[in-house]
Length: 399
Image (tube, rainbow, N blue to C red):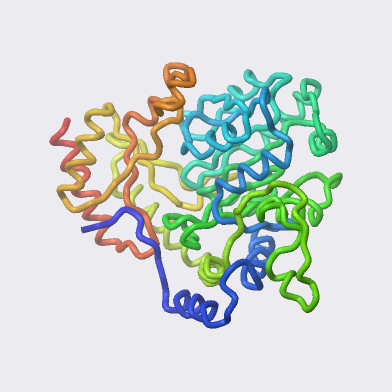
């Protein structure tokens, strides 16, 4: 049996978690703060805030920016539902844009068509670890500044649409030779169990706002929002005589624990090695799969390099029915596969809200014949070869 994406857990990671458990400090504390510092250094951004999920980071960013009823947020139709759900949570309206056929990422030309006076944010998604075209997106936002109608202090200070990157898949991806993180106003990563770097559950916000914002101040504001609106966290309250605190707003419970941060700290130590192994496996897949039959995903170009989080393969001439049959046959061969993703407008809740996948033909065409193959650090070359052999056999039989 070849699983789809089991986490890699080393002895060093286990020892680090045990050290935390023995320390007597298991919630947000010194290891979470250290993890934030190390992440900021890795991404070359002034501050990082760790949270219990990427979803929490996306929602906190939108609420901090003042998103509310009547406001619109543009995002790709091809993403996981969390990207759209957080907009709904804030009372805003998700405005879906179609994606580019060659890389699954949001089409900036489609974004440009949808910007209006109600647009408050754009949420690009780095699909499968492949960075979106941040430069073109920022140029688009600048060209539409005259349409932006600010409400509230943070919107006034920014003076344009917020670019909030859903980089759940792309920690360690490269854009113009630098790690993803500083290219959007706020970039949100996921450390969920299936991600390249995992804390079991977790996420982080990387801040790269213009100089008109004080990164330390934004970090503190969002730290308060992430912990019930409490003026001091537990670590600060523990200092002698420093117990008294205030609730300054009705915040949320989104903080990361030191147990989770322990895993993340150890993962960071080997992360370059993890990325290199995933790249080798990705390229092995590409070398074994014929481009006459398959549409292989991108891994690297002159300006971008993936984090190799997923291997999203497309089968030429296949539709949903044939793709689903292929998934069943692969399972019978002991190989777990997946589909990334069912476009959000196809989900029943969003259909009920008035969205239709017919408005996003590229997203549907990518979804209909996509199958995601196993890709993880401890996957063996021999297993990749077996996967490819079984895949080609089943595709031929279904054809």
